[in-house]
Length: 85
Image (tube, rainbow, N blue to C red; front, side, top):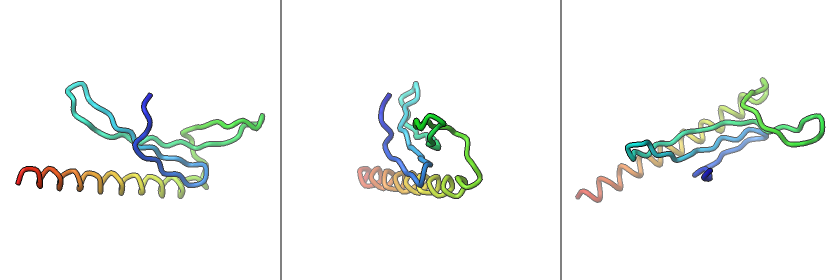
């Protein structure tokens, strides 16, 4: 599996941005969210389930991911426009 192109974290919450390619060769991004925690044996695990206190951290990291992707998309459009001129 390839590495994410960008990660954002707050506390035990992590959002990762992945670059993917469709069967037709079109590139697109996806976002994953996970919470890390230690189990009863003191081993690290991860889950997609959030506790109430995790929600603000999830919102923050998702907003950062959205900001990153929005700015990346704007930059790519500007580069294409410059290449066409």
